[in-house]
Image (cartoon, rainbow over all chains, first blue to last red; front, side):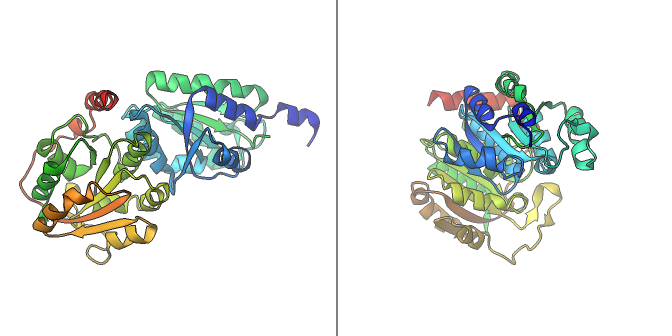
Length: 173
Length: 188
């Protein structure tokens, strides 16, 4: 891995900093290889986060919604396959229920620098079109400057009481 | 076997400010039996009631939360038992109204009806306290004590349909009622 490539990659520390800036204190998670080492494992050790590990991603959609009603901000940290598996919960709980469920979704296997819709992998290509069809806002978080998108996206989700998906395009450094 | 509405009326008599998260038939009946701004019926998708309840319990450890799950619903989200037992909120009481059918969806039997024990599943996943009731007098005698115990608690309620109550899914999932719930929670 060259220095130039490393410099351009999103940094896990910047992601965590932005999540804290946005007031995220609960993290609901199912492990994803894209985010386990640099995000989830450090979060498990970070006293600023309470991490709840769930068995299936749709549980997390509802836990985040319950937490929202108590005044807490939460992040659902999952893999894109779990997002696809949770479509009905996202439909009923997040979108129709107008809950600001904030999701950070690892795009395991996405080719670096290639937009998700241009991936060779079918499962990755369909993620953004599905979110568009559901009216769920999404941002790609992959390169160094992308961390700046995180806190505003979360703030906007809470302001509109609607879900948002932050797609992690490759493993952070 | 208990009539579900009779069983819920017993619970309502012992309610003392708890948040209650009922689903499907229990929800349709509970909103009439124990009307309150602290009824959280906005679960949005089948199987999700106990997960909403877990979020509420974690977010407000000072309030007790009662989930009134259904057996078809719980079967759709069995992993929730492991998640709740692991998170171990002391303020969560997870009840399942076991009637053996998908009552809202045509009263078709659930898979494995009568062939396994939800109570045993909950115990095996690590709920420290589990109970099972099929007799109304037993439930009436024990419920007050159970509601004061440290959770997470799991309670199987063996029920059958009782009196008919009107169905109003729009009310159950109403955003306006959800906002009233949030405000009530903020007040106390």
